[in-house]
Length: 111
Length: 115
Image (tube, rainbow over all chains, first blue to last red; front, side):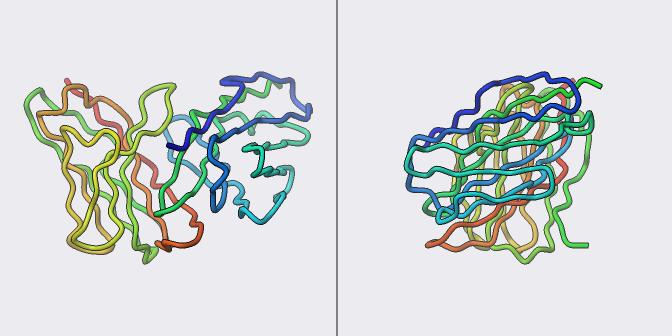
């Protein structure tokens, strides 16, 4: 069964710093990978979707990369802001419309 | 606006009661899902449905039941058999394609507390 791991579980950085969140998965037979943001007590909001044939996707200050063969993805956040504080989750999509989620990285950006 | 609506946002249940969480989507998605999220933990799949009148158990289906009578609706009933139901429940939907990747969309969640 696919297992998705996110390291670190929590991260605290000063405002303005660039940072990288990591996501790894055990089975490289995926269709795509999504990064989500979750604010406390809220649902998940999709940030970026990378198809298995793609290497990266960018949206504003966010850049996600995918190395399917090694089972890794990174989410790069440039010039972090206090409003970026949230939990970030990654999920992979595989056969049969199944989704597998990591446990998330809780990010705190200190003003 | 298109999206997924969950209700109620907050629900309190007494011991021994069944409660039903509503999930409605107007995205015309075939697949719908229910996840449970406990504080500081990841999402665990309760039930999912790929088409109307069909649904499958997820990893933690015991103590829960669902129905899928309409494409846009996928209610979840938390029965008295669920021993520890206090959690955050998330409904999601996805366009169903068996041979290609899909994206998944979430509602705002429902908090269930046993009192």
